[in-house]
Image 1 (cartoon, rainbow, N blue to C red):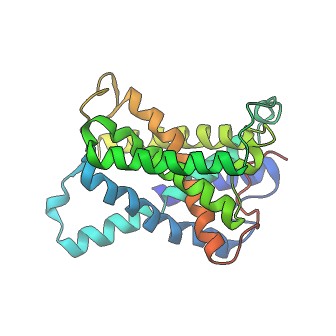
Image 2: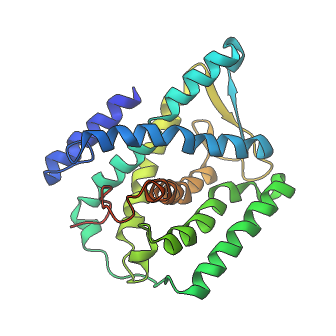
Amino acid sequence: MWVGYCLIIDALVYRRTGTSLLTRGWWKYIGLFIVSAPVWWIFELLNLRTQNWTYVGAEIFSPFQYAFWTTLSFTTVIPAVFGSAEFFSSFDFIKRLRRGPVIGTDKLTTVLFFSAGWLMLGLMLIWPKIFFLFIWLSLYFIIVPVNIWMGNRSLADLTRKGDWRPVISLWLGVLLTAFFWEMWNYYSFPKWIYHVSWGGWLHLFEMPLLGYGGYLPFALELYALYHLITGLLGHKTVEYVKVKPD
């Protein structure tokens, strides 16, 4: 189902723009799937501490089966989000957005980001019932400065010019993806359910409404993690993921 979603959204992007993740390089597109699984497993590891979601029906699988099928499912996360973000970036209302606040890449800003990220991560690990939301913020604040220092692509390269259109495209893209994630999960089996110590009211499917806000920084984390990995592989400045409107 999710491979179908990724291909449909990719086709829509191609129809609107004449280019897409798949058509720009099928090997790079496959790379999105390969990178996606280990990236999501990072959040699964952090969730061992927060226990914000569990999988109903996981007990019907052996440990090997569980690891195989979950990893296979996790491969579609990044292609779905990035494809949806490119879809929204093709619309005129995104292209016409005016300049927003400037967040630079200077030494002070990056050190503050880096320090805040580790502080949030520490608070989440020490008091997970209170600061569980930092699972969706801390990694971004840690990784963005690392990408800047390493010379990797970063959203900060654009926000320092006041250009927030890629950020908005990622936010809208991940919310579209989140709607289908939560809708298709609702009547599925196995499925995930949520456990939060506060903010767990007014559900849309299994997810509390406030929880959808966590998807916004999650999309930025995916972008940062992807470019950290590609930077480590020697592709520091290649603009493959095009969430900035032309």
